[in-house]
Amino acid sequence: MTPTLLRLETGIRAAINFFQCNNAMKTLIEAQSAHMEPSILEAQLHQQRYLLVEDTQARILTHCASISWMYALFEQFCEAILGDWIDFRSKDCLFSDLPEKMQEGYKSGLIMILSNLSNPRYGHLSENNLIANYDRALNNERGFTLTPECLTHHKNNLRWPDLLEIFGRCGIGDLEGWAANHPLLTDYFDSPRKIVERLIRKLSVFIQYRNEAAHGKIDVDQILGLAGC
Image (tube, rainbow, N blue to C red; front, top):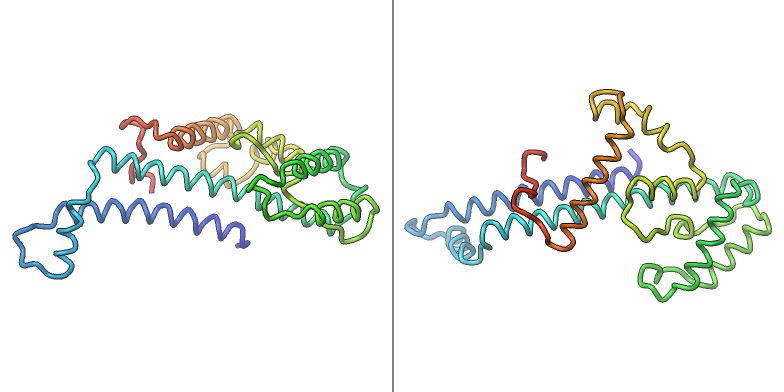
């Protein structure tokens, strides 16, 4: 398993554990009896019961935290695998050998980032390094370095059209064909039929959950439970 996949799996497991632990702790606190002989643990549980958030609000808080975390993992994973791909291409060929769309996308992305270096999102980047790396790339030097953010930048949540645009910008075409024929997706959907259409719907629902969670606009009947964990 690659480090990128390991980080994703670890993050997902952390979200599931958080959800389950939070639910178990709530159950323990509510079940603790004030009539028992107080031990240290019981005294702590008894104290915590006064801090319990009202049930509906607690469920909303847990839902919002979990969904926001899961979306962050998804976005970071997409950017990480594309970063690995961009790094591989910069070691594999000359800049002039890259697809024209990738070259043009890198140029426009570089200009955008240079004009937005004050944005905390790009605070780890250096103007001198960005320009020096691009100069080496334009001079067709071997082992040049591409800055992934120049190709993976995006303003919107990563819905399917946005993924197609970013992957295409990075020189990866036919994402729909790959998805339609990938055995893991076939297994997940239990059928090879209309995989892309169902994947797009799943992703759309997930991002809708994320947007609503970010603003706390959640109805009780929209809250995800433990069944899916």
